[in-house]
Image 1 (cartoon, rainbow, N blue to C red):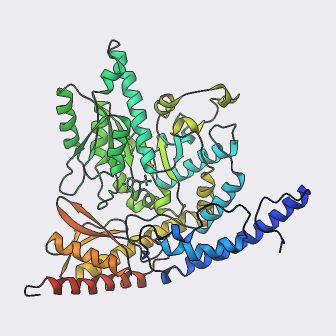
Image 2 (cartoon, helix red, strand yellow):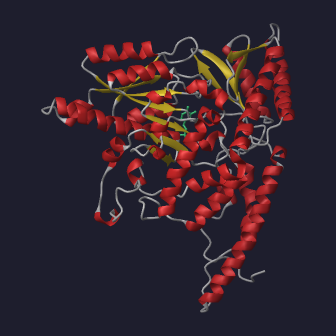
Image 3 (cartoon, rainbow, N blue to C red):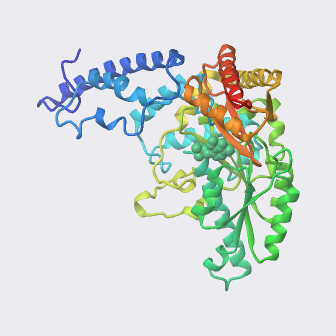
Length: 499
Ligand code: PLP
């Protein structure tokens, strides 16, 4: 035991102070490693949705930060007392809401190392390993997904990958690149038109099932976004896009950007990349692929038919932080020609210049912020410590569990499946009104044993059950179904006439 309480003591003996702090860190970190392993191992025992009310936390904390250092043991005790009662346990096998957010020991440990190195890798020279590992990891990952070589740095051209914080940022960065590319093209044809005049004519496209971050990218980028109707399989088709482009062009607008989603948030439907890609290529429209959730599954060759036509895209993105065991944040984006993005953001003050400029990417030009963490460490640790085969097995296990749940739903005549199950998301509903399904969901979440969120497509309200947890087993699926089925009994009994 160090004898020192807290951190930052100045005793007049700096060597001793540093050693004591390091000793304290080792004790603290060891205790935390135990706590984390315990938390995750026993996560099923915690109620997935907390029962606290807004404002629960402030009364549990002092009004101001402490003047004197406290003991880490006291802080640890407060994690259980103050924090855990207000945590939604995303890693619980009872958590079926949204999409998963990844969690693994290798990624947690990599984050510790990232915190220790604590570099800000905005340029090659600001930490060469930070940039170079990212370039290689994005090639490894791209190869694991079967991305065409035109997206990879190992192709020897300009292409390559970059780790963004989120899929939302990737969609926005691609939009800004597309905007810069189209602006340059139009200015060449119409040198007398002002930037403002040109940009006010810009229009982008996506399916109306695209994630809200896609529409938001349009708002942030100050351009019009047209949300198009998908077909009856909820897939955006080339013909629909082509028609919209034709109509807008006839009105004097300038189509410049389209987003195709592989694995929509609502129901995991897939836009048709082959068709939309062909239209985009013909019309000079940048095609960005948002595969935020489903992209992780493309490490399994049997799922890759969903990305047929990917070679026609300009940029591709998915979140290893959703379903590939790499903790948030790690959103993998590839650009066939990063120049449009790099040039759109290129501000080069003297203090950021270095002698090796141009020989490796300066990733600050590929993203919105200047600063960036050493996130590729997480990818490196996860890919090495699991190996591709175990990562594939993990995805396949979740998909199999989704089919197990689907079979339970199909066996119960009161229920119906809303959309084909292809990944680890099952969209289902009670046959009948939206209202009865809303009641069922309310009851499920109020009961607090499991947690789900709903969605609505074309006025049909349904429940989404996503397999999210690394710890999810068949027994958990059975338990979740039992809970849903018995709450359905209650909801249906109440809805019976005369009740
Ligand atoms: N795109 C799709 C299809 C999503 O499902 C999500 C989130 O679930 C996003 C984008 C946004 O992801 P992020 O939080 O990484 O911005």
